[in-house]
Length: 295
Image (cartoon, rainbow, N blue to C red; front, side):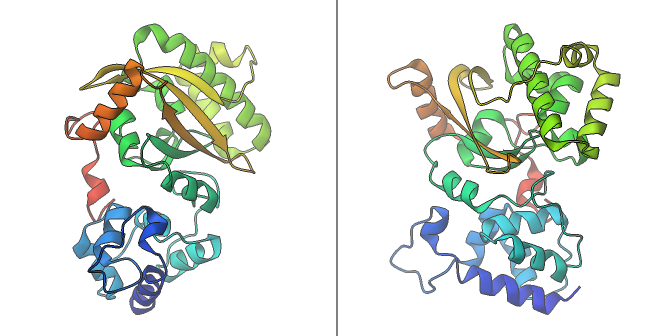
């Protein structure tokens, strides 16, 4: 691993990102045109000290998850992201699939402009790639796991805690929608090993999924009306919208409520309380790892 080259590359990319590109205000006292070190650290979910060590080439060993987060924070395109992984002597992750996938620039640009509403970018297997603060407060941050468990669809059929996000009465609807959506993704991806393993594992572990899969219902989840159970605000009724990337591998999700509705009022409250009322344990909690060097 070339620590000095990695540090120099990070510093050069940091200098090219303007605060407005990532939703920050420049402020009157800014001495540099690009981002400050602490701003990059915040955007990537790292400690400022750890990011400083990386940039100064002091021997830190960033994980693939940290590199992916830095690539998003610094708005790296595909080639620059791959170069970052090469400098860190890490295998380059797939361009579009998996929880470490590189978020497509167009998706990230749109996400930056949705600061006033819960929004996140996920893969076609419902693995969260990046989310804004309101989305983390609404649905919780992604789990600190790799593999199939990173997919919310997988957890929906295998982990009862995942279902606490929605009222029990709505569970059959979401199960049908998730299974039909996965059918469409499996058909589009063809004989994809990741999808094949996920489907096989879900059929073994969940009789409900197996029965739904055998109906062969197919429908991508484009829009949906949802009731989300929030630990502080109770049940919030929202509309969930999806924008698909050109290749279909990534989706931008955002949540809205009709003006003047109870849901709109709850979203306003959500922007005030943020994640302060979300506990430190369970699927709705913010992972401590998101703010440490091990994230």
